[in-house]
Image (cartoon, rainbow, N blue to C red; front, side):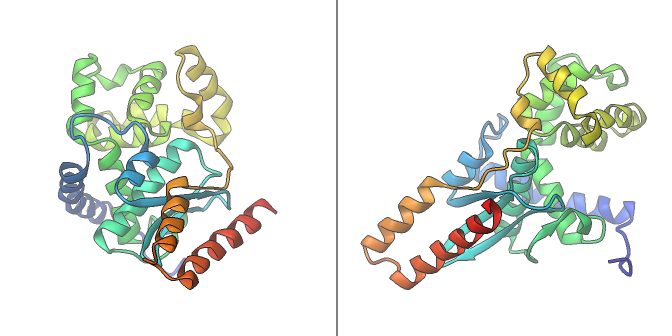
Length: 256
């Protein structure tokens, strides 16, 4: 990895601009453009994806595979729920565009155009520019220099994202406040987890967004559809067995 060149700010901006129309097209076709996404996993399942959540090492974001005709998104449940939502949309980018290179690692983000585009896609899906600016205006927050942590947490809850993802998005959309917002970003770092939880509690916010779930789980709808297709001979017993063996192997690995 050390031999690879990091993406320059100019290249990142170019990649960001290239992703905006893709995300806008996706939201226009499949989502309610006027509201944030309340539950990412349910939304993706409605769109035909199947979600598998499993705990693993922190550098792994997730991955997407097509297995026996099923579109499966795997997400690292050792991350906070807010990051899991983000990772799921990151993998949705790979599935939607066909721009897929395998497992998504955080360490690759600074080098890989593909992974950086997937990150931008997730950000644009969860926090589209028009909704963010509307929220800012309607809540009288246009001077982000003085925005309070509590206001950021309430906004984080509204968009159902991690604290760090929200601040990063605000910096992208309001670059003149980068210095002030970067100071707020530190609250989302792991070493400040307890401070963040205390501030979330103070505004009666959703703590689950900043906590890991650490569970292995498979979409119930996925299993139901798998068995229904098997019963109605739409897939072979061998294909169904290969999918179940993959899931069972993962479960044993991450629950042992």
